[in-house]
Image 1 (cartoon, rainbow, N blue to C red):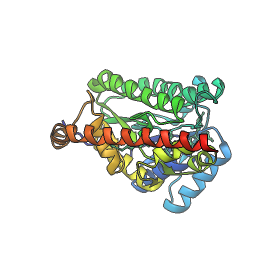
Image 2 (tube, protein in one colour):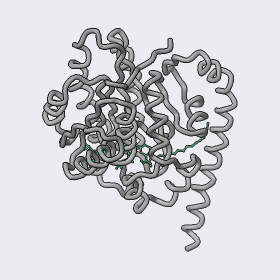
Image 3 (cartoon, rainbow, N blue to C red):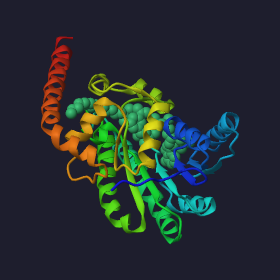
Length: 297
Ligand SMILES: NC(=O)C1=CN([C@@H]2O[C@H](COP(=O)(O)OP(=O)(O)OC[C@H]3O[C@@H](n4cnc5c(N)ncnc54)[C@H](OP(=O)(O)O)[C@@H]3O)[C@@H](O)[C@H]2O)C=CC1
Ligand SMILES: CCCCCCCCCCCCCCCC(=O)[C@@H](N)CO
């Protein structure tokens, strides 16, 4: 059933909030009257973010320098930040590379930050979020990626880390629903951020070609979709039209609050599977072409 999770005058805690999508979310939450806290590794980037939010909305955000891989550092930050109403687990790292070429330390880095780091943050927040009475509905939101709905060339480790978040989210929602806690999973396409700019420099050509199947977005737009999804307690939040098709094609056994969306899923799942097969046909065609071109050289 539908739910409404207000953010005005409530505490929104964003990991990876000093850059890109997380920073855009922080700006929007602050301008909508939320009390905002940010967590990331680099203190100087956090201070810059704090400054820019103060300039644009006059709001003073709290900042916490910690690495999500360090449970005790995360726990300390969260205890210092005070009770959280909306947790956005958004930190993420992405180093695209064919698995054969990628070092295992890079694989582990992505799994540790994106997946294990998310466990650390949620484990630290949950007891405090649960323990408060008369607090109204609260939210735990996770930033996945369209690469967490479909495997993409060059993203073996990254896709695995983002698919992992879905299992975590589906199981967690069942565990916390009785506490009026609502889980949201966000699936952005390529998004114009400092992290993406870095990624683009090292991305295999095929990764760029396949990821181009979905249009790219501005961080502000993704943040707006995310925040609207969080406020309406949506479990799955797609960000663009391709994302809406992907969400239907991969709906599986995820919960659905909206009767209208449930109807769309049932009505369009067949056609979306057809479109998905067409995309796969196309992707394998691109892969074949790319190999043929490489051989010629
Ligand atoms: N941009 C894109 O194309 C897409 C991004 N996403 C996802 O959205 C999220 C945000 O991405 P984007 O805005 O592009 O990323 P950015 O690289 O621009 O920002 C990443 C943020 O995460 C923080 N961070 C990184 N590692 C850690 C860590 N170990 N501990 C704590 N904080 C950390 C960074 O700060 P610091 O380095 O100081 O720690 C920074 O604040 C990620 O989860 C990403 O996977 C999903 C789909 C597309
Ligand atoms: C029903 C069929 C729908 C068809 C649409 C298919 C589109 C899939 C495109 C996948 C794009 C993956 C982008 C990853 C972005 C990301 O996370 C990196 N930039 C790292 O941050």
